Length: 611
Image (cartoon, rainbow, N blue to C red):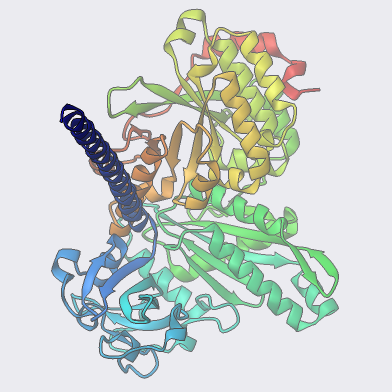
């Protein structure tokens, strides 16, 4: 009996052990399942947050509905276009929030009503022009695209509508046809509509302001291509240039084909100094365009006339001035940008400064360094942006955009980069080097210079400034144009201990994606976006989206061109990390005596030119 009892106890113990093991195993699986569930929840939360950031960053309006056509969400741009807020629109019919009509007939568009079911092959329907009646009963023309989301069973689960604003109506109460306002070949605004936009823009400008700029572009070699290859080739070139221009300016800007090989661009909230940089980048982009036709290759150039618009400007006079400036650029400068000053009969060319005058300024100490305070909003250390100025032979400061654009056209800009670095670093005493932080802009020429990194290393070895106290700014366009070179260049700067900023950023997520793995420190938002914060509700959402995206990637944000206290308050509300602009602090010339001593000792330095 005892043996039997002992065996029973052993059997019971084994059963209990097995049961305990099973419980432990189940508990572990449950914990694992809970951990996996928690992990999935975190990933879902991250995905939702990323989606919200993207919706706030993109410049198209986005509306989502359920399968029954009831509105669920509008992003900020869609709210601006429709004048409906998401909280008001949720649950309402799409046809109520988005009443779209055909541009030609004025009839409602059936595919955007909830009772109409599209065929499955229209999952990604093509964009089409339509008239939108907003909540406040005004009419806008939009390009609209509907995308349907299907369940595995084939049933529609939701719809996404993407909107992009087109030009305004020609006149109140009139339904304008597409042909009235657009160029049939390129799809751009035509001359008549562009003149209307220009007139409206000037009429809405505040007195004594210069907020917008006008560019007129004339292609080089277009007639030659037409004569050699025929009109089909010329038409294809015009379409290629149209797409290139659309990719280089903001969607808020208006691009038109005026006729033949002439284009015009209205740059909103873009003063002349900033417009100079935009025009120069357009020149470079078109000059880098090689047109291919049936095995033949042609280089393409462009001449650009630039005019700053004032509130008292006349649209016809402005267009004539831009055309005159374009002609001067073509005849006298062999292309490039020519700035026409409306207030004076004389024109100031972007290429007026000759190479000899720039070299003479360099040799006779007529270059000046200024610094402008970069204000931290969250308690970090104050730094300064370094600005380069040139004094002409009469002792007057040359317009910064005119000077830098001319230097770039004469291929001196990388030489000036070296001058700025050498002069600044050498001017810093030991005590000043410990206290100061500086931000220096580098040109695309320095980015592609194989000897620049070695030059910079030599400068740090012979000065009192630690590399971590210097931040180098690279423009987004330079990075995008030279991505294969930019990545190792940025890595080398970081290895030295320097900080790096992406400058002139306008919301291009592709650039951030390409550089996401690099330790970029700062993202400096494009000045034109900052300047339109108060006038364009969509811009506020874009800047806010850029800020949140930068923080997710470990970057801090800088807003330049802060010209008013109202803009400063808006940026503070978004949470921007640093502010720079005349409303924060005026540029101040660096100690003239210190720089004079440096300049006297560095004349004709071999390291400056790298030769």
